[in-house]
Length: 598
Image (cartoon, rainbow, N blue to C red; front, side, top):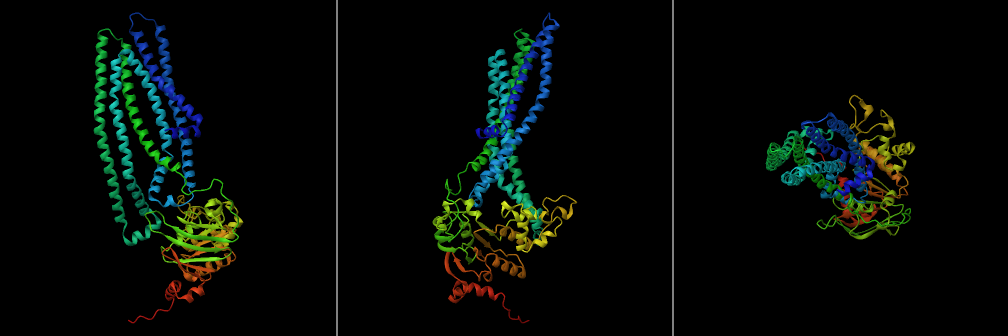
């Protein structure tokens, strides 16, 4: 609660102060109205009275009525503004915390991803709701305190009975709040899976396979089973809540009925006036209703606070990778990168992915990584980018351990072209410009990178040129191609290539299957382009297509996380080892196959 209120104080102090002030005024109005009503009724029922003794309280009562009808609108306006500002600050802090993660470990950890999803679900909406509930609790408490004081003056024992009658409801609602949070956590995986099936059934990317293989009914049936399981869980909770709330409601109603009987008897005996009865009935109704409302608000607030805990876990989590308080400057690469006895595994429960790797990437040279799937190629790239740290050994940038450098500065001296590049639902210019945000609006550089990737002519010919959206996700009905286009896989590959080429001054260029998905002619063209681009540059090339790496200065063969061979193409072919076997196996696929007899 302190964390949420701190958000509100920082985000909108004036709106928060206004909300609290109006809450106090609104809380006091019903109590004042009840006392004024008592005064008016007692004046009217007195044997001899003048209009002067009635008109003053009546006018004040009318004024309270006007204020009670006007103030909620001002409170609603302030609450809305407070909610928007608190939600904005909470969302910004959440994604600032997410963006501050140096590595990839928590993005590849299922438990951490679950926490992040829950934080995303409650991060923007929950803090304003908690603030609103806290203000509502304060308002109800003030109103209840005023009416409780009135009841104490009329009958202390009745006041105590009314207060105690609300305790069971309060405890019941708190127990139900815990049960609701438990239910939310139980059904959360089912709801995420339901969303996944909904995406599959309504996505253009999956439409072909779903119809070709006829799996739509299967997916729909699975989604239906998940929804039925979710509904059954909520139904059980609803039945439990109905049974649990019945007892406290009966206790409260019986207490109120007993108070009414005592009040009527007291009037008949002359112990109470008509105004006292009106005040008593108003007090009982207000205290019981207010305490019931408080019970619900406490339960709801408790539920939101439990969910908000996931938000706090994400925003207050420690760094995933250690970073020096004053990191060393990252100087331009002059000698090269070196891996010294690097061992790595993703956790103590996993096998070693890299085992004692020693490798030098000399400045200005091209090193190629080849090997089977799971050999450790992608992991080695992640370590070079410092998305993870080696469990043993070190990675050196011109002799300096990269753990001593700023990760952001280190990565600013790298560029990459990856097989699993992102396809942003943005314009063509933005899709390329994100490769170097410092030049996001540099049209000349963006076009130069696109021309290097062989895409300038295609992008210029789009309906809005480089400003054309490369997606139909946000298209408006009836807008046609002017609101977005879909590129082919090969065209997207070239856009990703242009993004990687935009950072032309990078000291290290990482090429991870840069031509996958291209036809043979386009693949040859891209390889020739990259061959010219990486000339004299420090490059790391990862590819399963050995024909693409044969021109590298050094070819490194990984197997089971270890380097089993290294050398240039001719040396490795002459050794007749693992590389030669892999190369011949791929070459056989291009050789003329013998005719198959009928």
